[in-house]
Length: 372
Image (cartoon, rainbow, N blue to C red; front, side, top):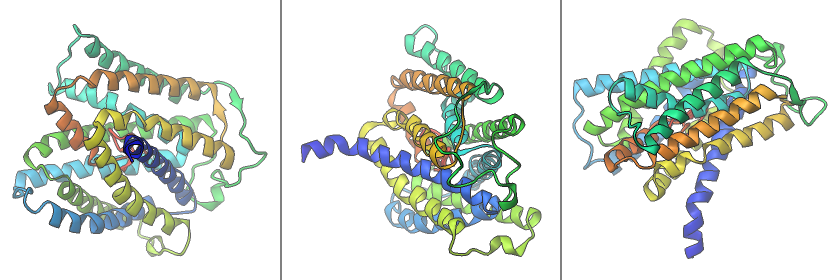
């Protein structure tokens, strides 16, 4: 029994990363099959809201403070930045590239968040300490890795494990993809879009940490974020996607993706991640995020016949190395800072948290790539 308790948190985080990886893969396939990303955003967040709403009402009844208008406005902007803008731009980038690219670039979120926190004077640079220097160096390495990953492909290390993809995600006639994900132009466009989405998510984490101090009810906060995300995406869908067929769902991969992201990512992953954060701390949960990259990379090479490039490999190594430097630097943060981290992680994901829950797609748990 004691052995199970020791390994339970490790097993839980492996399950979380497999779940996030699965969401990235399913979203890519569903988008390729013609799923409208705006309609997807509406449906998945409605499901998440219906799941989290009753839990928030009963479990946080005594701890949930009254919701003031300024706090409500801030939550609206959190949803706008961290969910509506972040995920829509992320999905557009994923449409140009592959799940592996999304999983890799989601690891830059802690570095981006650190830069914003320093610029806003919410965190101080402590260059006199080793861990302070580690945060700065890790952030610079992450950014350098992202630039290498985006702008330098290099030669092929291998050309996939199969002669032809088991699932074709490069067929322009089957969905909304913009041509082959192997084309350099599409690779750069997609990577820049994903980085832009991750920048918006990092900004939302800063705002969310501030809101969590006056509204310490994570379930209720996430329910409100999902409500606003559904509302914002519905308005955008009515303006930009007026095809009534976009809202119709059949018994196919599109419905599976919506239900999977709404139930598994928003409910199961949320519970497991929150439990691990409480048991082991936020740094422990973030350490597992590169596992998602490995899972998605292997799956994509086998099933999608994705080709691994030298530049992509070197960039990913730099990003992961920088991530661990940042996490090591943050491991000495005081309890108040850890509380802020907890609030960040309990929110969006990703695909990532995502992360990623969202989501953090795709994601690291300090982000949420994946994402509710």
